[in-house]
Amino acid sequence: MAGVMNKEVLMKTYKLLAADGSTVISETPGTLGGNSKARIYGRLDCSAANSALSKGYAQHRVFFANEQDAIQAGYRPCGRCMPAEYKKWKSGPEGNGSYPWKLLPK
Ligand SMILES: [Zn+2]
Image (cartoon, rainbow, N blue to C red; front, side, top):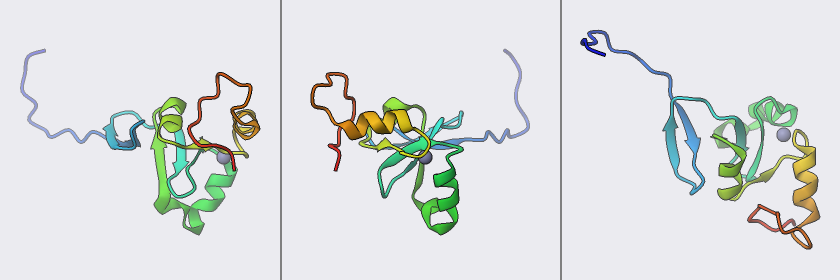
């Protein structure tokens, strides 16, 4: 590709939370949202998350590229929009070798 770009291209970027907890700039939006205060991750269209946005959640909202990053960052699944993962998380690591979450259920 030859040629010079004269116009400045404003690329839309997204701030995502990486697996190590650092913030990374991505050109693609995250697939999951998260609450950095409660350390919960869930779907972007989660009804619980969206109804909480106006009640202070917006300032704690982070985004993840994928579920692995959210888990590695120490987040647990949302009970509203990810019931299967939530149930698995809630049931705890005992007898479950594939339990990926870091935090023990409370
Ligand atoms: Zn949710």
